[in-house]
Length: 124
Image (cartoon, rainbow, N blue to C red; front, side, top):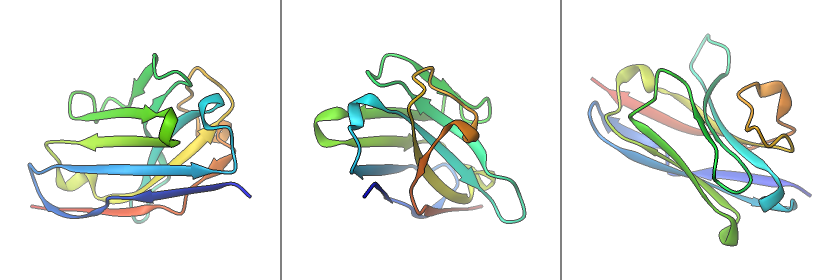
């Protein structure tokens, strides 16, 4: 059974930082690209960041470039999202996802496994 479990969300003031983690089980983690997506109330789920199998290729949404950093530890089956200089518009439920496409993709349709999400709330 595949499981992706996110943690690290919470309430933070604008300008603050959070570090999200997503630990996987049931998949050969090092063979999956990993992505982070977010969904705010009333909005579609959108791409945030992604990392290739080896960690050598990173992709970011324009809205988070320079503020967020995605990384992974294949020995611990875990992917991270370091979020700095947070803004109120970053408020959303954040999901991690796994894809067999190594680009890594920004298209959510290319991700076959998803976590349950973790809430991030940024106050102004």
